[in-house]
Length: 194
Image (cartoon, rainbow, N blue to C red):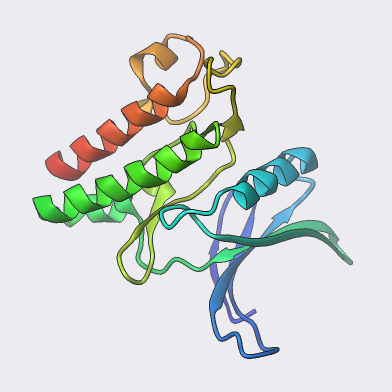
């Protein structure tokens, strides 16, 4: 592990470089204390991540349990994104052409997820990171779910972030792909208006 990148509510993320072989890429390694979260939920998120392979979604490499003297950790290895988040871009007031390109990339990643019958359910600027080339990548699949293509998600439980929640979801209707699309519209408006 090369350096600590940050600490979140449930774990710590590190930058890692593989030392064996010819692979010189950097990775993000998130270590989550299993006592903090439901282990099955962590494994579910890793399974969902492993299903998604698109240029505008976070690239997943591995997930596993690691036992330490202090307890058990769930470890998720992904690509390292170094370009900041869309939340940071908002304050920089990007030009319209850049906004259009970023939102198109988010929509492309989301359309791919929906083609797999996956719903993100918490799309917001903080959950879209940029790689070193400035390409938008959807991250944080902790609330994502698999749904039938022909019907909305069974859950009526309110999940996600209020400011990016569709009016239908805010009043307790079932979650569906259109709710993710609404969130993309909210992101677009925020990038334009600041």
